[in-house]
Amino acid sequence: MEMSAFAERVHEAVNSLEPGELVTYGEIAIQAGRPGAARAVGRILAISDGTLPWWRVVTVAGRLVPGHETRHAEHLRAEGFTIRANRVQT
Image (tube, rainbow, N blue to C red; front, top):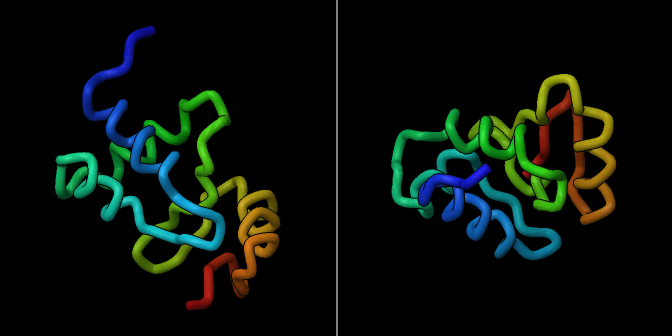
């Protein structure tokens, strides 16, 4: 299945994140050229093949991915983040 240009830009933006770097879905949407498309970024990450460092992307409130909080928290803790009540503490 061929990706849209926006999906390709989302993949590029997420792949460019370094360990210990944390951004929001909205920031990725802006970087990929579609401000306001935070939910679309989430959908793209949800259907990706798992090779993207998806755990470096959170909601603007720091909330972890619903249904994947344990795995999300494990990845973030490994990169030095503190997690409380399924949210990243900044």
